[in-house]
Amino acid sequence: MEQNRKKLYTVGIDIGGTNTVFGIVDEQGHILSHDGIKTKDYPDINVYADTVAGHLRSLIEAAGGIELINGIGVGAPNANYYTGQIEQAPNLPWKGTVPLARMLRERLTLPVTLTNDANAAALGEMTYGVARGMKDFIMITLGTGVGSGIVINGRLVYGHDGFAGELGHVIVRRGGRLCGCGRRGCLETYCSATGIVRTVHEMLSSTDTPSLLRDIPLDKVTSKDIYDAAEQGDKLALEIFRFTGTVLGEAFADFIAFSSPEAIVLFGGLAKAGEYIMAPIREAMDANVMSIYKGKTRLLTSALKDSDAAVLGASALAW
Ligand SMILES: [Zn+2]
Image (tube, protein in one colour):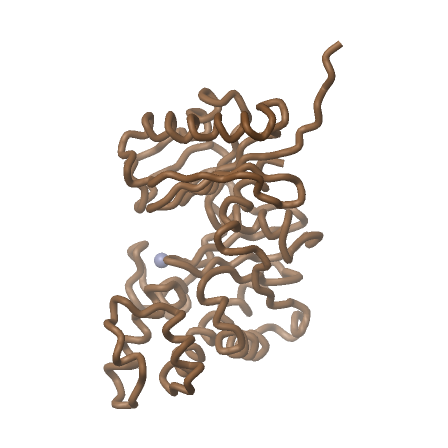
């Protein structure tokens, strides 16, 4: 009689515009092995799927074989959980709709589940991170864009079409900055990496205040630079964090009214600015939240290592 071996691992794949990374993960969130390829090198989706599958076969063999793998989770921009497709992702090399879940399932004979990167981050926090055991929280990813994953009653909210939870495109300033989505004043235009650079530019050009940031070419400024300047007591840098944190905190106060989360969890470069960003977020949140919610929602930062978070998040989909 054939013994039914316990499924010990899942596979997590994170697809970004530049890199695709994947790894084999156990139930505790340890990454056993990982590998990656350059997404941009594969404009042909069939060659891409063949290559990812080829690399994964070797990793799976080394981990003890396919019978130990519970399934594959994929995090990618514009990935639809319901259809298993990536739909019109502007930063990926494949145009239109790509049935990636089916393509990987056919090649690896394992169940494949897809979701967008911010949803995967939320699942990663819930499975291995600071949101472990929480049933209601909102994940906010602060990166090139602003993404969100909303968990209600222990489940990610997908909406009727699979695209729910685009809180980065909630309008926080009517008629404000032009957004990549074609509308104006989205949260993302103030609080993404590029949004903050726009703030740096506006503040540098509207005052004569001396600032260390004036020495950095504008297209090279990162939240790390602003942090370093703030550490030196740079007034403008502190002002930039205060403005950005206030916009975020005001928005969070509104998000709380929607789902009354136990926590809002922040992930990404900006979240590493510590109290420079957290203090103004907390103050604006408290000042703007309805009194019935006051003091009830915790503000947390991700406990997952940057380099691991994407693979862990994707792998959490496959449990
Ligand atoms: Zn937008």
